[in-house]
Image (cartoon, rainbow, N blue to C red; front, side, top):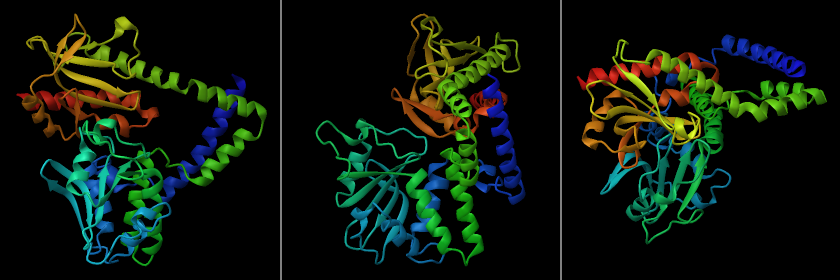
Length: 385
């Protein structure tokens, strides 16, 4: 334990040094975060990327950024794209959906970009896009570069093939690399250059890669300096999941204390599901509910849809005896879009992303999440009135 404490102290000193540097340079001042648009796929990410790709964009760099995009290493499948008179659109409406970004070339070919920050795949989504644009290359863009669900690439008859019918790309690597090239080319235009820099920082924030190389190298060198430090680092890695579960447990206790009965300012009571099966809150499928006395078997439902990574919420029916959630009419849930949270689907039910969970660092979750949940609950109740 002494070695671990020594290592943590040393890491704290190193991080503090770079935090001071970040404060002096204004690195933490990010317009996208200030405006609470970090995870808005349409109005932030698709809009920004499409504007840079658009030869007629307000950046005045014509097709330079577009050429850099299609000519990136590993993008050979885009090399024959005719860039003359290219049209770039966002939220392109097709007969059975909307496509995030479409790059239309004059020769009838082009690129479809399906942009995923936190939203889940829709049934047959990429199949529908391929049917609408059979001669276009489909790029499936996510934070880390993960592939689409089988439900998105198959309709029971057709199965799209990765590397042929669609390609996966990531914000973490592909988009960041491209943006860094755009930034270098925009060196003579300070406002454009710094705006791109702000967006790059936003992507690093969303992909948990904000640590700069100097900071990272100093930490690595500190760890490998002694065998004791290496052993201590290994021990910390092994228990990191337990640390996160402990933080969630503390959040649960705070919520329980605030909503133990109906004697609070929102007149809500909380129930945590799956406790009989010893499922840890935060694991996939674990959930919790808020209900009122006069609600008949209906609650505001929060659900961990992947291990510790994200939470969705909705209005839903609940059966405490069976522990089964049955969909409440979607028309009622659609109104929740006014909370400003991102829409997604769960068991054919309209659900919304509790985005603040993803956007809050682990060191801040315990202090921030209960307050944010309370604020969200208050907004929902006010709207339902």
